[in-house]
Image (tube, rainbow, N blue to C red; front, top):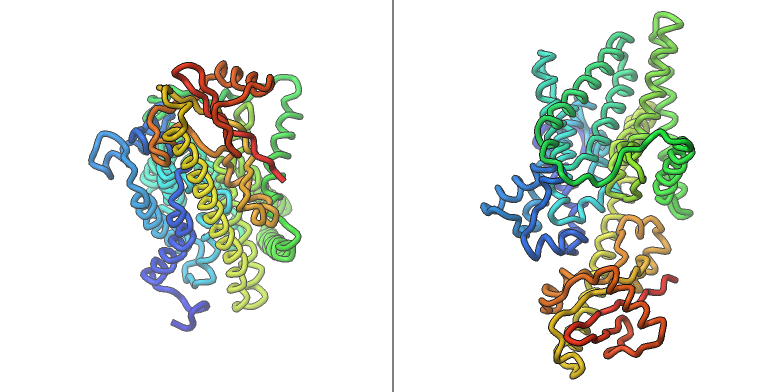
Length: 497
């Protein structure tokens, strides 16, 4: 091998590189061992309930892995399996983009895993590995090659359907990767006919995959989570408002401290894009062909940006969540690919500079893992105080059932104030605005008779607070009101600095 960075890698060396890189990015999540939102109730009852969401493959994945009829918590085994599968998938994608791949070239595809928003997906100990396997399926739908169009379409359709059966939002990644492939083909000298054929092929693969999904896993869908967007008066302004919200979330990755890096990456990506457009236009044989080829590249770039929230634009109301912005992964791959083109055009050694933004993404992952760990420690500490009061306070001796009344903490986490101030997007990715859920009491405090308070019960407790009725227990973080054999544990609202 010529050099550590610039020399061509063998398939085994590529696999080793991706295994190390993928596991390094996921290590903070394993160390945090944090039960993220739905994990709390799933771990308590080994529950599934994915089939009704059209995601039946997740149920089969956990049942097959655990050799049971349910889903006991096996973390981090599912995540480790997903990491290995991702390493193989990234190797296939890097081989597609670069016939003679180097480590510098392998850095181009790493953002499919090294995406800040994707950390929220991976935070779910149950859903996260399945979402990652959905991404793997979409990668193979892109990289699979067969001389027969029918066979290739069938394989791609099955991969797309499998990905949708794991998590529907991975379709954004597939669309983004198709855009990368179109721009790459244009830059490598594909003819106008070949570019048009590529667009048609990818559209056919996507349509076939959606059809297969519609005939299989979609048939189990019983939980309509949101309605499709309607073309009511004002829908354009609402759509633009939703797009602005998505743009604001992505822009939050930019800070005054990393401004130099963001501008450097974007400037090199723009240079690479203009270079590819210039190359493909120069190769055109007619004026019409020049416009068609340039328009294809521009449209692909715009589609990759739109695919960041992608599928969410079809639903109303728009759901603002980092885990739904999966298209950011493929958009970052496009940015890295274009930057690689520009850097390698100047000097073959400059491709290694992509390690700098990769390190920045990796550091965000480790900071994210520490915030999750802080939340776990803070939550457990408060719950231990609740357990002590329940076991020792004489006024709670006759209570048979406790009801947890939630209060929105607005993401307030005292130990993470410094991180939140330096990385404003961190709070959006963490997305935890509570200290406890009813399902956390048995695990953290050993209290098994806790249920979620109904809306009427929560309103009654708020009335007690507003009228000054003293609680039986008044702690710094919570208060407990007793009503006969029932008691209400009310978390006090946090103070967000």
